[in-house]
Length: 377
Ligand code: UD1
Image (cartoon, rainbow, N blue to C red):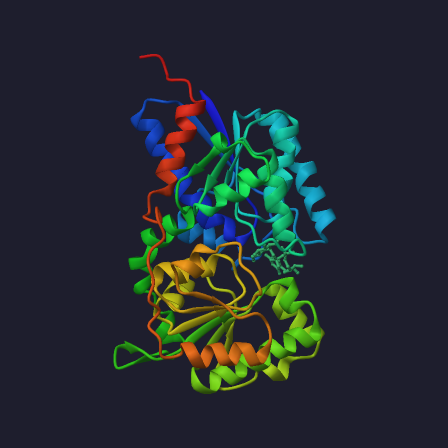
């Protein structure tokens, strides 16, 4: 029998693990391999909209362990995850730990496992923004450095890894498990009543609207930067009404910096963070998305929705070369100029190689092939 532990911690992790757990179950059954999968939620994200709703909508099993670490400064949060996850590893003694993405929980659990000589698989390895002021960039570099299986979403990731001295034999280009999830749920998302609920339907057709999301510390933790970005969103909303699902970090900072007046406009609709299906419904039908998220750049690329990324760099360059993504930074004049240029475009795009809904199957094939003992016939 083989035992794999999967780690999730924050919102963008859930959609990356869900297809992998299913693909592993299917492949193990087909190949007559006995596989126990254990799901550990570190509790980095914990409010219902950021966590429970995602589990429910993605069909993830309830976690076997919830470490309930909650929020806190980086060192504290990472340390709390490490302390709690180590205990799980001691109890369970798994054959492999799977981590995804680039959040603090990803790094914390990879360190624990590696130090106990348990192999680590990193899904979404090798992405680099080359901006070491981003906490996620530090998490990516360090997680990759100690992972045994590095699964990449785009070909440039291998180059980044090899340039950092990582053995290319450990790198597997498999595609994008987040896109596996998107393709699986795209049709179900179409039938969500969220557009009607927000008054975005007109005679059975979606109205013209855009969607915006903000949560990067570099955009929302400084009062002037946050105020400038919100003002540019207000300007855009004069032409294209915007829906703004507010991340808890941004919500708190708007209150703290006393910027509420900047989100009070009839063209800017502020809503709570949405579950996976409702957000996918909103994004699929939007004319444009303005965001500082990593994952949304990829989702918009596959959906063909023009995306203005409010950052100076991206760790996902394929969304620029093949997809619908444009980097516009956080300067209001640039944001508005880019919006004016793009507002009538239809977002010509190609689907990046291997973003075909089968990434998780490819990962399962590698992991079972490399690690599992076949059960006796
Ligand atoms: C984290 C990840 C980031 C990812 C983002 C997606 C790191 C370093 N950052 O950033 O890479 O893009 O998640 O959302 O791992 N809060 C709640 N409820 C929650 C979670 C957080 O109210 O369920 C509040 C807390 O007050 C917290 C703040 O939001 O202080 C920020 O949460 P935190 O997990 O520290 O970072 P994120 O900004 O969400």
